[in-house]
Image (cartoon, rainbow, N blue to C red):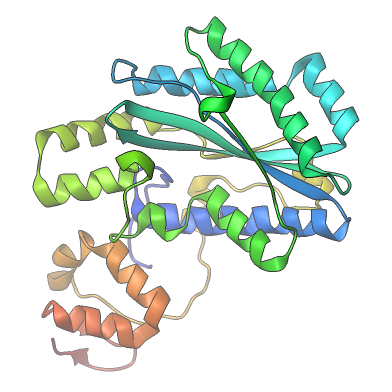
Length: 305
C-alpha cells in the first residue's frame, strides 16, 4: 500500500498489523531455521490466567507482563536455562473477548540447543508455570495448569512447520485480520472481529469494547525477544513498529484507487488485501468491479466499474 498515512499499530490497525506481522514472522522464521540448522529444538508454550467479566483489560495485561517477567528471570530461570539448554525465547500476547470477559494469554516459542523429548519439554513448561502461577497469585490472579493454564507442544523443525509457527506467533494468520474470521474457541472474538462487528452493526457494546481495546493496547509490545536469541541467530537489529510500516519495500504497483473510490474501499480494505494476496490483480479487479468502484491500472487509463 502506498500513499497512505501509517499509524504503526499492530493492535488496532488491520493494515499496519499485516505489514508489521509480515516482518515479525520473517524474523521468527529466521531464528527457527537457525535453531534447526544447529540441530536444536523448540517448544511452543502457552500460559493463560483465570479471568471473569469483572476484570479490567489493563489489570489483566499488567499482571500478564509481570508474571512473564517472573517466568524468565531469577534463579529458577537461570537453572532451567542450564538444565534444558535454553537458547532463548520469543513471546507474543494474544487477547480475545467472550462471555467471561477479556482473555489475555501468552504464546512463547522456547528455543533449545539440542534434541529434546516432549517429556522434557513438558517438564520445562511445568517449571515455567510454577513461577507464572506464583506471581499471578501475588497480584490477585490465578491459573490452573490442568484447566487450560498450561499447554506445551513440540515444534516440528521442518520448513512448513517453521513458517506456520512464525505466522502464528506474529499474528498474521487469516484468523486475525480476515473479514471472514471465525470466532475463537468458546465463542470468543479477537479484537479485529469486535471491530468488524462494531462497524457492521453499530452496537454500543461492541463500540465500547473496541474503544477499551484501542486505549489499553496503545504502546504495548506485541512481540518480545529474550536478550540473546536474536544475536545468537545473527539477526539484524529489531525494527520498531513505526520503522516497519514506514519502510518502502519497493513492491510493484498493481492497482491505483482514486479519491472518489477510497472512502468506500477504506472500510473493507482488509478484504481487498485478502483478494490481492489470494488471486493477484485479477481478483483485485473483480473485487472493485463487484462494488461498482472505479480504479486505475498502472500505465493505463482509468478502469470502469
